[in-house]
Image (cartoon, rainbow, N blue to C red; front, side, top):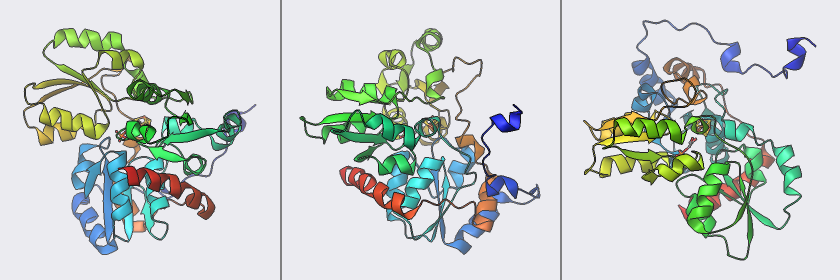
Length: 331
Ligand code: 13P
Ligand code: SF4
């Protein structure tokens, strides 16, 4: 079989098919600001984006904060610098608006490894269960869910479900296990994981901690149980940033999540020492390969051409909206 036959044929995203060289002398920041005004656009960026993108955004946040901003914006265009499921969520909340992404190939290992047809089949074993889906899922999975959560509000969301109800949690098994521990609820877990957070190991982190015994170890709940077991604090990206900013009695932190968060930690608490936990992959730092597909050049082109545009079929958007709004109502 030829390699072409083995690889599923996918249509080339417009961003890649049309990509032309950008004049390197253009002042991209100035051009992006100009186009943003011209288009009445808002730029939303996740903490895992490069510092340059975070700095030009109107709002930088975690998955929950970004959804809340998307729900209340009156801009005509949302330029979403994050991964595909985040832009899709913004679209579900704004079907009448234009949602663009610098690079729509920016997927997510959690969302990609939970295909809706396989999930629907698997769910046949659990017909009487409430489906709690992490926001890191496709619109089609959201449409099959009862309520959505993010890492900031997962505990709150699960606690909102009556005690006598059985729960399926998808797709992150590590976040799911952590929520089970925090809430005391038993849940059926879809066996998904994040390719960035699974690369942290307790062994490597422990070794680094010995070099910096004064450091507090903080971790995202997408990390494996063994990493979470040795963490001093566990939280979403926003919670980790707040912890570093507010925990003034310590000034050194080992951070087990994507290194983009360290940009805000340093910005909000100048002088703080934040050390990225080393992935067990031979790399020096943990970077989400999907998030980092977005660049200033691609953001400029997206605002200039108003594409690549994120679309969601009407029927799926309609079904996915209810569980997203249920989550937003809980905060
Ligand atoms: P947050 O909910 O902290 O934004 O996390 C999103 C994410 O993709 C973590 O890998
Ligand atoms: Fe998905 Fe992991 Fe990247 Fe977050 S860090 S977007 S969970 S692949």
